Length: 523
Image 1 (spheres, helix red, strand yellow):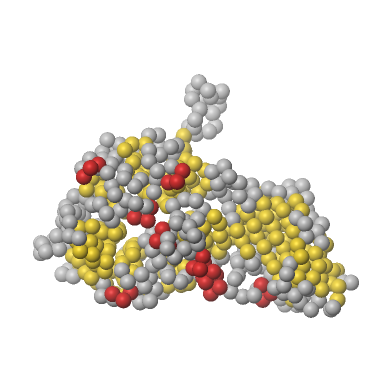
Image 2 (cartoon, rainbow, N blue to C red; image 1 turned 90 degrees about the vertical axis):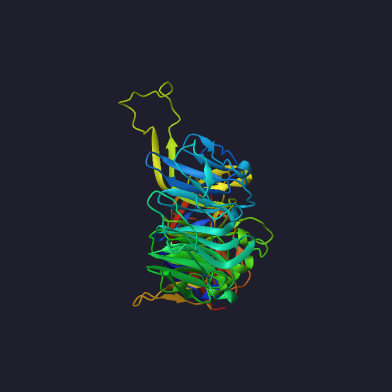
């Protein structure tokens, strides 16, 4: 009985493949990945998230970072109030007019922008709000010069212009319309939105492809502004002169699933967005789908059809990931996330329990005082406070908390398990001349030892055997493998195809693995 070793590396080069039967995919590919990420040629268990910012003044449904000269600020909105946080104190800055409240009903309504350093927050029901000064004593206020009878589902900045999308004017719905303001002077809001005033440059247009549905959202990219409808995308260019903007249908059959489902990638070169049937990126030239047929079918069959409007996306720029957070079947609020590396297209999944995310600077302060610190000033090596840039802050209104993503190994104190699985593995070796894999499902194989190339916390490993590719799996009992004290794990499995599963909590990393095989013959 010939014995051989099968050495599988580059375990993060392919990711999960659902579009082909397991016995047809490369040995480096996986059939299941949960709570892990494919990063730097390795598979790493996801980090967790930990509460920050203390206790918010109201259940947070939306957060917006404000980069102020003196210190970072965070604005956040509940259903009826807006608060400001300066790293120490939560201050109620709700407007003082119109009942000193707002009329939002959920996280999906809130969105915002920043024009000339002035934060603007909008919910589609109330007049858009602006924060006139970086001070807890300054309250939000109705946007100056905004028409009192006008409302918009979305408001975004595009250079010195504010773009209002999906309008309601004097109670009349205009879901295909875009209105832009007169360009704002630096440090000020626009002086007018009056489209009848020939001395200013405010304007309005109705996008003509009514069959493509209503306007859903919009975002700028590389000097252009993209307006996403349900089944198309329009591109606006600032051409100046009499017409101000030149617009054309950029994507004629691809639109946006719901509001909050488009974001700019970490390099600023692409939009990451969710269409009606796939996840895409585009750089202003063409849209590129990121999911294979089976994965996209699996994903969109998993989204609850009655609550899909609560979905949202965010970018994790350090990891070069886009997260699509959506309500799974039977859920009202986002409960699952598909995580896609927008460079390699590798994807994985995890459970979530937050409803919005924002990126910005997180200020942390040392809890020690002069009285409790045992070290002298000269002997103290840790900073009293630090500023962490480009951190992701998660809004969790059901628990009235903010969480920081990728902080700690638990999810707000709850441990979770990262899992990877490969089934229908029929490889018996490599061609010595070409280096190609040799796969043979007519030969039965017995694996009696696995050599995981791992680091981090202990994991559970089990092997399985299948008599035919895709057939029932006979799993071994799981065994604990501690990469800090062991090099291999003795487990036995036999069949025409083999299966590998690794799972564990508390943080682990897999660079590759090696199988000790004995070929038993063709029977």
